[in-house]
Picture 1 (cartoon, rainbow, N blue to C red):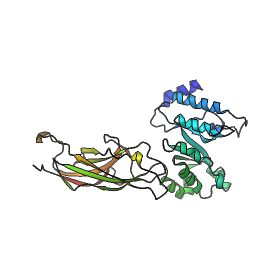
Picture 2 (cartoon, rainbow, N blue to C red):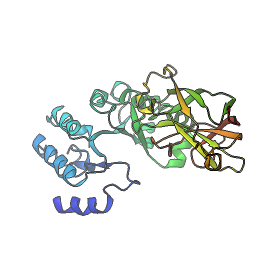
Picture 3 (cartoon, rainbow, N blue to C red):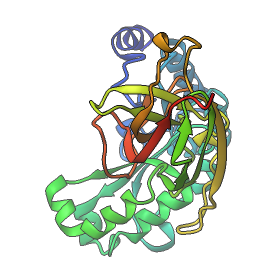
Picture 4 (cartoon, rainbow, N blue to C red):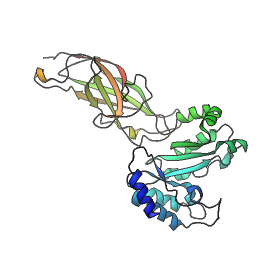
Length: 317
């Protein structure tokens, strides 16, 4: 296993297309238990050893520990160990059973969700439906709420699942992970090219999980040709710090930043000239690179969203 993981990490560790890798080298289906095979238990030490082997080789990629690592008398300690090693939690087969047994370990998620994205997976939809456990699927959404999940996958043919669960999918999309919403943005309609100006925004996170990657609001000014004339970053507001809450109850956070226009004292080298500019908003790095898509219209194709206009007037002196 050590050599296999070394080879796997050499190919995939740090690959931006890989969101997470399961510690799936122990138990049936990689879930850490043997209920569907020999029923012979692994020890807690064995589980910890498999976690250690994965963390030894995967330094840049998020690893996921299955909640069933705690089964067969191993206890919560195995999950706590995974949390201390920087892993996230994965819970498979939500709604294998129904009612109060639709899921069992939402309390484990308290060790993880504020720091790493929690992963859920549903039971095979067809059998769960046919056994009468799935019903309207609302308990899968309930699990997403309880675990503060950032990933939720399905176990079934996608088109058939969507056809029978379209409303559920819509509801999940509105809550899964983080969902940054710009509530209000304001700025002066006119500013002098040699002056200062303010820019205020109000945000909320309507999702069930924190915006773990974080990001700062950036105001971009575009000229008449669509070229970027200036970028101003509000480094006093980080989306990572927006609180999460029950559906429809997310509080808002407002912040105002003050900027000086980018100019040189010599008119011939002034970077920003008097005229009309488009104002665009984005969320991204401290240097203004957009990183996070927003549920806003007027996307320029680079995760900047047009909000309105700003007029830059000639120098005031």
